[in-house]
Amino acid sequence: MTSTIKVDNIQDQDGNNIINENSNTITIGASGDTVTLASGASQSGFGRTGTVDWQTGSIKTSTFTAANGEGYFCNTTSGSFTVNLPAGSAGAIVSVQDYNNTFDSNSLSVAANGSEKINGGAGSIILNTEGEGLTLVYIDATVGWRSIQDSSFSDTGGAFIEATGGTITTSGNCKIHTFTGPGTFTVSKAAICATNNVVSHLVVAGGGGGGYVCGGGGGGAGGFREVKSPVTPYTASPLDGYPSAPNRITVTATSFPITVGGGGAAGTPPNNNPGSNGNNSAFSTIISTAGGGGNSFSPDSGGNDGGSGGGGGGRGGDAGGAGNSPPVSPAQGFAGGAAAPGSSPPSIDAGGGGGGATAVGANATDNNGGNGGAGATTSINATPTAYAGGGGGGAETTSAGSAGTGGGGAGGLGSAQAGNGTANTGGGGGGYGTDQTSGNGAGAGGSGIVIIRYKFQ
Image (cartoon, rainbow, N blue to C red; front, side):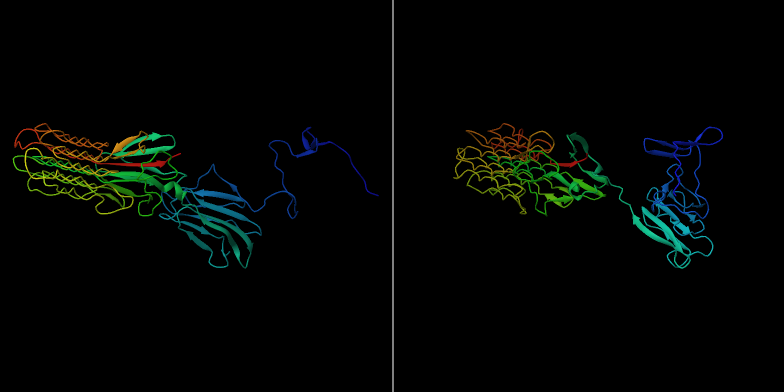
């Protein structure tokens, strides 16, 4: 016959509960007591299940002996050391983990007790991989300690990029790095998620200078290239080159030199000088070509080729320079306009407008200078901003060409000073109007800009 004892509590001689049952919850031992399973006894239903208790309050920095059931964070920053395993017993378990990703520079040795083995072979192993973690379980005398998990957690990046360089602002969840001169975009940590490493960028080259004397051609705008990453919401220009692989930049944890091109010089007296081309801007593999200089009355010739082409100068219908040179897709700019047709002064001395990022420079007509080509507007910097407008063509009489939106300079009428391209827009300079050989003159091209935008939270 089975006997049954029914109690709710069992107490020791001091009145402390040893076993207590309350609402189907059974508590063994009082606070501060140690509950020990007798030697040789077995247990089931509770206890260790193949994991360790991590000793987060004791980071190891020198040689020590591990205990069964414990895991240790090992910091080898100051030098290599050894973890001595305890005497093996079936089911014993020990784990170690690189504390601060230094095992590659200062290794950690793991040594078995006495003649015991590790993975059936030598009684010691060396961990020398950055971020490595290892869990060992003792099986028997044949195999000894067996590694059941060996992995590295060397990724120090988080979900987002961390970077420095340029002038840094924020917009929502994005950081914006603006370079108005040469610098370095340094990525200290890349994002674990590959998509977050695709950065938005705007690269605008320096605009070309305007041509001097008798209807100088307007300077062409600097090349305009933009890519909008899908993780950085903003309103991009119509020239967004995503997702074409040649245009897309996926950053890694390294430094990227930034080149910001200066504007081209204006044509100057006393001779009939064309404007100079601007200078290229660059970020990684993205190179935006300088704007072409506008030409002048003599030599009677076309504008220079460039990111956008310079306007033809003088008279005789000389063509503007070609844009998108060398060619990329989407096009980085358009051609300049032609000089006025005909050959008799003074009524037909007028230069063509410089090309812009989204439109050709206008041709001159009679003695009306051609307007500069329109630039492109983007909100990559969190504010709608136009860049890369062409310079207006100069004119002897009647009217000079207007500046292209996006920083172009207006053409000069008669002896009036032509407008400079606006700094850090890549706008082309305006062409000069009259045959005066001193005093006022053509406009210089505006310098370029590089902007990089990425998600940081």
